[in-house]
Length: 299
Image 1 (cartoon, rainbow, N blue to C red):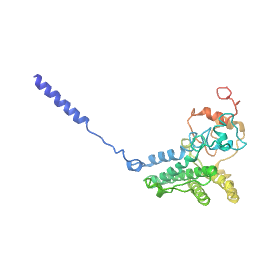
Image 2: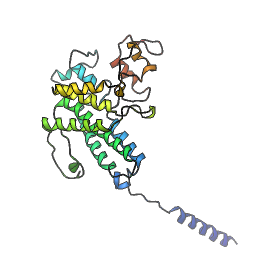
Image 3: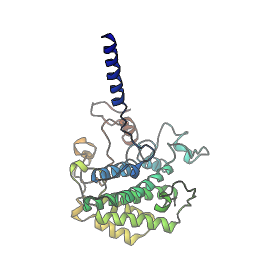
Image 4: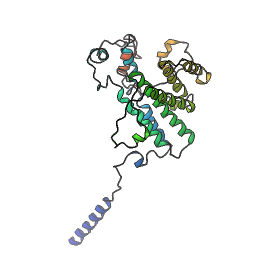
């Protein structure tokens, strides 16, 4: 009886082991399209959100203490800072420039242009609502034009890889800087094509996505930077049309109140979670005696 019981236990154990060894294998040597992503509207929207908006966030090129706006003002007489001057901001004027420092260089951000180009390619053939697809592609084009404009303002012409190059990542290819004329065409074309499709506004769940107003505003700034005054005037007049919904807020002080965060003066809002790096934003955007919601002054 004991031998029979032992044999029974062995048989059961082997059966359990064989059942447990059924492997639902996955192929991890491929990424992106090789894994079927993106394959639908939900995937496409997630891809565009991650590609377009990460760089235009408080953690990206708008980083409070070392982003585009802060560094741009620090090299003029607009901005001043009482800490980190000799190691960060004064490096633009002194001989201690460190090109590889994250708090000094935004040049590495140009890779996001390539990511947006690849995203356009990836979602172009997805079977989904065509209106949504057109809007998502327009968001990517707006992102490319917006980022290319910022980097052109900072560094002049930059390297921009075309789709053919991006589709052959293993090929060793040195990409030269674009010429001024090529940069102008790239920025203008992307923004114009985006403005044709993007909506004037969104519902609250999509607040912070690129709009027709943003595309045209960046285009206006580009025309002013490149001294194309007639085009700048035309875009400026376009932005005053009531469809855009822009107007000055009557109570200027209310612009600094959380209750009026979404207002008619806002053209683009870099969305972020409450509580994320607020201490840096306070230090670089508000005066030291500005009262916080808790009633304390920020020093």
